[in-house]
Length: 139
Ligand SMILES: [Zn+2]
Image (cartoon, rainbow, N blue to C red; front, top):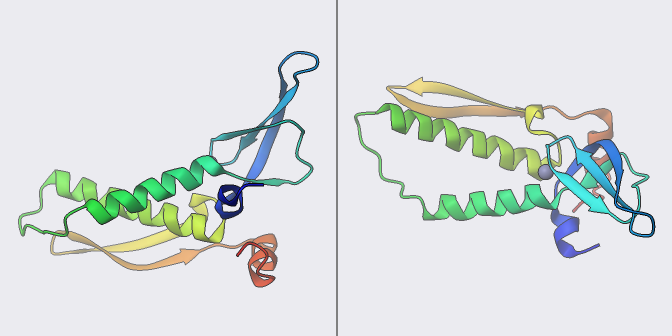
């Protein structure tokens, strides 16, 4: 496993498809996040690290550090859409930190005079997630 794989968020394997010809068989793992991981062997584990998700996350962080923090008092539809995107990206980043699907993270916002503000976020963890995080296996 590469370092990248170790840092990548783990996703549920939904389906494993055998691809390729005899002698060149590979296994395509379809993950819960919608990405695919191709491996020379079918994974025995119900979860696989998704490098594609990790790459999206690092791109998101780069984008955020470049983005200007300037705010204009008149909020346009575009700005509202940007706020929604930021909230979605925050949700995605939190999900990847915990190694859970994005729909396990709920970011609650309020409309503060036309600005969307984050109030709090909840992360739903399954029994498996709790055990994995509590035993500190991933990081
Ligand atoms: Zn993914």
